[in-house]
Image (cartoon, rainbow, N blue to C red; front, side, top):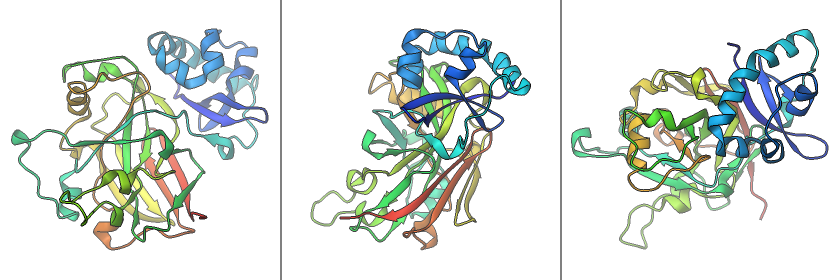
Length: 312
C-alpha cells in the first residue's frame, strides 16, 4: 500500500483537507471529483478533526482510498496543490495535549534530573493547551520574559478511540495517527522561587505558539512499531537531537494505559511521548529570534518553524 498522510492547508477561501502522497499535497475535494471514493458529509464539513472522531469508519475509508489516490496522482488525473508545502497549517487544533516529562534517561541526565527506578515509579505527564498549537512554517513567538527558549522533538500519538482504563496490551488500538510535536519550553520560567513549589510548567510551557505540531498526520498502520522510530532536531541546520524511540523509559503503550486511569481519553487527544538528549539547556545554548528549528521523524516528515521575538 502506498504511503499516505492527512493534512490541512490554507486554500484561498478556507482551511481545507489534503491527502499527502510522496510529500505532495492533493486537495481532497479535487481528488473526490476525480474519482476518489466518497466521504461522509460530516468529514467533508469538519475536516480531519471530524475524521478522528469517527476514526473506525475513516480508517476503513482511507485504506480503500489510498491506492485510488496514488493512482490518480500518478496518472495526473489530480494535480498537486500549488505551493502546497508552504500552505500547510496545523493538521487540526487538539484541545488536550498530554506530554511526557523525563522519558529518556539520557535527557534526564543532561537536565540533572534524578529518577526513581521504573519499578518504583510511573509516567510523569503534564498538559499543553490549544493556544500553544501552530503548524509547519508558522512562527514560534519568543516572549520577552524568557532568555532561555528551548526545543524538544517528540513523537506524538493521536487518539482515535474513546478509552478508559485500557490495558497496556490494547493501548495501541486506541491510536489513530502519528505526528511530530516540538515541545517548546522557556526554561527560566519553568522554575519559581516565590512559592514552596519548585516548578511551574504552565508558565514555562504553555505560552502561545509553544507546541508546533505536524506537518501532517500519518495513519498508525504505517508505523507498526512506535518504539522503533528515529527522531532528529536541527537548529539553523546544525543537528542537536538524534535518537530512537526505542530508548524511552515509558513506552507509548504504557503512557496511554496510565493516562486512561486518570482521564477518559477522547478521539483527537494527543500524547507527546517525551524527548531525548540534546536540548538547549543541556548544551547551554538557547533559541533566539531568527533561528530556524526543524524537527524530523522517520516515516512522518519534518516540522519547520522560525523563532520571532513577540511584539508587545
